[in-house]
Amino acid sequence: MTPFDFPQAIVDHQGSGVLELTWQDGSVSRLPHAVLRASCRCAGCEQARRHGAPPQSAGDVRIAGIVPVGDKGLNLAFSDGHARGIYPWPYLHDITQSL
Ligand SMILES: [Zn+2]
Image 1 (cartoon, rainbow, N blue to C red):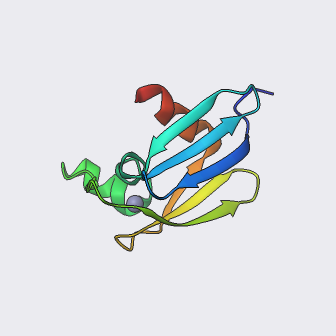
Image 2: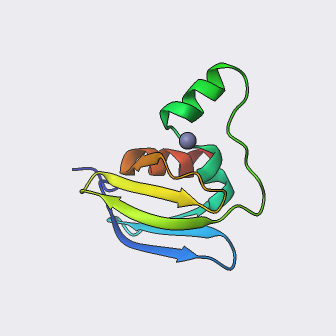
Image 3: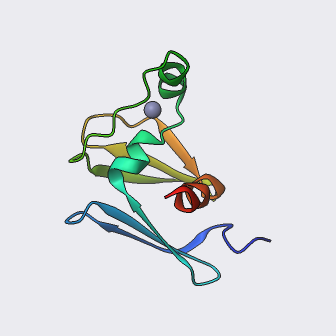
């Protein structure tokens, strides 16, 4: 079992637009909502990427809803109406490393 299998705490900071995940090893990921929006891997966004038009990362986009997907990760809904992205825990951890 890897330390980032799943977070022990999830805190959504709407004011600053940051999703904070505390992993099992105590490390903390602070993921800007706009980065998460731009990192969406739903079929529509992946297709847009292949056509050279990656998902927009509007600076003021906010997470509008967080839905757990079993123990696999999160389904995030955004204030621009986009709600199709599934974010598995390892992917969320990877995004942190790339910030
Ligand atoms: Zn998407």
